[in-house]
Length: 81
Length: 173
Image (cartoon, rainbow over all chains, first blue to last red; front, side):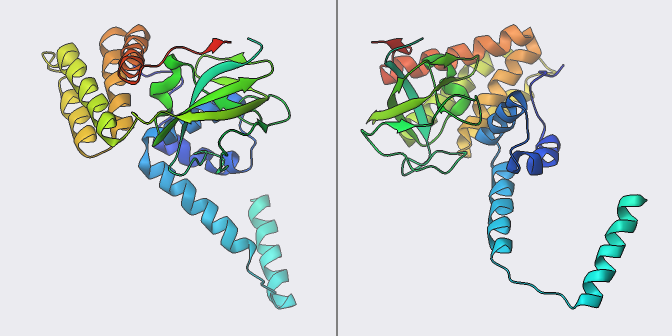
């Protein structure tokens, strides 16, 4: 038996990006935050994600054009696979 | 509910909202510009919501405008921190956890397949993870009595908090 509304840590981790992007529906967002209240592991993971986003936002990175094109090509292939 | 509603709000240390990082001022109205539960609005608790949202600081908050009451929270377009509930502290948090442990022991301690929850709740409380202990207590109650058990345990937790903190349910004034 399991409460319908209860999220496991694995589900919270899977929803982390959606939470940060603010695209969870209200009920899922509430369940997500309810889990954070008692789960130090997921709370810490969320803080790490937020810190990473902040740090990455300050990184000024310019790739050599050839490398950038190779990466884009690889991603195109990945999306299509 | 409309008018000024007296409610409660848990915040992290330093009056920081745990999910948004917003630093709450004291005595100043904060206007969220509308209500969109879990996104926009001032989120707060009636007494029976409190056990779900435990945090370091507990504040009394006035909510203004049309207040939406949901199963697990109140949402209003604006709010103002009135006073900190000083009696909510680390000592009382631990006592709250021990009360959860006692109820769990009484409820499932003699049931072989659920008695492990008593140790779980105890370990979390002693380890300082009281919100997790409170959740585990509710979960043990659910496993014995279904969702009614979960709600009963959360209700007992809320009643304990209300009594020890001298709180009343959110009321329109």
